[in-house]
Image (cartoon, rainbow, N blue to C red; front, side, top):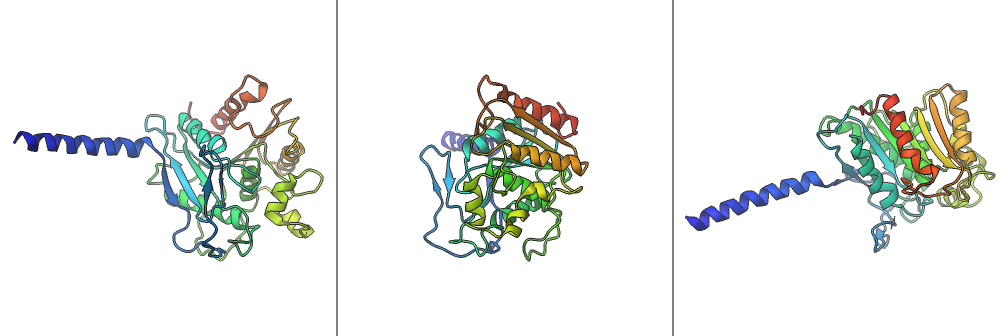
Length: 310
């Protein structure tokens, strides 16, 4: 009897620990159920992650990593995060997981989007592959809104660098069908947060690496304009919060300025923070320079817009 009692106690403790582990961690779900639209099967194209688990590339199976908001802080808002990486990889740690934990601290359910990177090796049309994944991410979050205790009208999109380009593209092309998907779920985000984003594909201000990776060399002007999001803003674009640094040598500050001006022209709410220094790729900016204040400014903006309570 004593042995049975001990085993039962161990079983209960084991189940309790399993429950704690589940609720204490993120959960990953496949972005697409079944066949991925526009995909080309390629057994040699295998996902890679560096030894520090901070850089991910060669993604053929896109996923969402969901970080539920703590129950005691949850405010029914969700933000989908698009890490940057020049459309050649994903800075999955400091522009993904770390940001998700910060959003959790504000009571926001955070979802890191591990989107496919444009590649002729796995896509019939590499230029729209990331956009397909981004729109599907919004569909999936809205489908799961009740289960995840999210308000379907409080879903934001956030992106860093090239991930900012994807977030802006999702924001400005939400009324267009870019595939034959029959699901009619609204793919317009309710707000966007763009951090040192690539906005434009125009030669004078774009990030060349991102442009070539997405559109290829010598892209037609129609395609360049289509993916220049400052030219695609209209009155239906969601409100935006933007951050950039004057000394950004990778992605010129003119990207964010052009987007903010387009938003102003279309009477869409927009807030732009330009910092004197910071360069590029600083994530949450854990330093003592002025750009380190952007998370606090973003928090205040989300509170003003009614997306967080504190």
